[in-house]
Image (tube, rainbow, N blue to C red; front, top):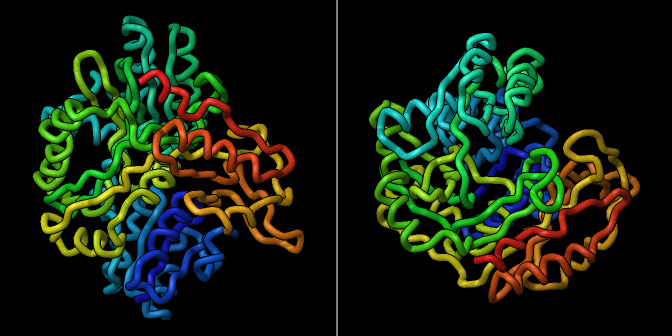
Length: 423
C-alpha cells in the first residue's frame, strides 16, 4: 500500500520508521519531510498547511492512507478535507482535534465530565484576568488557549510575573491568536508523565508511558521548548497510577468526546501530573508527542498500520498493544540559542554511524539536504534515541550516541533522564 505522512519533524520521522517496518507498505511519501525522512520516503515540497495541494497529491498518487502528524493541520481540519475527497486518513477530525486546539474547551470538558484536573478560570479580556490575579493563589499557571508550538504556558511565582504574563499572552500576542483567550490555572506539583494512546472513537488502547523535558537548560531551568529529550517507560507511572487513570481519565475522556458529538479517532496524548491527591490531567494533545514518539514507537511490536486500521475502522477492541521490555531514552541535539534565536545551515557530521548500530536511532527534526550535504535547518535538529535493558543503560547509550554526531553550535541538555535515578 501507499502511505502519505504529513509533517516534517522528529515525530514524523519516527512515524515513517515505524511505517517502513510494516510488511504491508510498498511506498511512503512525506510532505514536506526532512533529510532523514527522505532516506526511507519520497519527500514532496508541500507544506503541512497546504490542504488543497495535499489532497490533490494524495489523489494523484492514489495514496491508500494519509497519516497527519502535527497539531496545526489537525486543528485546521485537514482530516475532514481528505475524508471529503474519499481518502482514508488517520487523525482526529477538526471537531475532535479541538481537544488540543482549545485549552478552554478541554478544561470545560474535564469539569463537565468530572475528569480530574487543576482548578481554573478562562478569560478573553486582559483587564478581567488582571483583576482575578490580584487575589489568586500563587504560583499560578497562564496558558494561551490555542496552539503555540508547546510554548504557550507561563508559570508565574509573583503578582508582577503574572501581570507581565497577561501582557505577554493577551496584549503583546507573543503566541499570536492563540492568546486571544487565556486560561488561568491552579499550579500543581508532582511528577509529570506523558501517556500516548490509540483511540477509535469508543475504545482506547494505552501505549507505554514516557517523560519529557521541556526546559531548555539543565536542572529544568530556562525557557520552555518543544522538548529537549524524553525517556520511556516512566518508573513513576506505577500500576496504581495506571489503574486510577484507566478508571477516571482515559476512557472517561473518550466517552466525553463521544457524548459531545465529537468522536475522537486518532492519538490522544495525556499529559499527567502525579500530585499528592492522585493523577491530574495537565493537558491533552491530539497527536503523537514530539519527542515522546521517538521513545515509544521504537518499542512498539505491533505493525503500526494494523493499529491505525483498527482505529479508523472502529475495531480497536479486537487488538492489544505489545511493547518491548527494553527502555528508551532520547536526547535532543539543538542549535545553541534555541528556543529564541539560532543560526542554521551548518553541515552535520557523523550520521553514518547510526546505519551500523542496532538499537540506536537518529530522528531528524530540523535538517535539510544541500550541496554541502545534510545541514541544520531548525532549533531542534536531531533526536538521538537508544534502547537499553534498563533506563540507566538506555540513558548511557543515548549520550554515547549523541557524541557520534557533531555540527557547529550543537547544544544538548546533559541531564535527560536523571530523574530515573530518583525512582
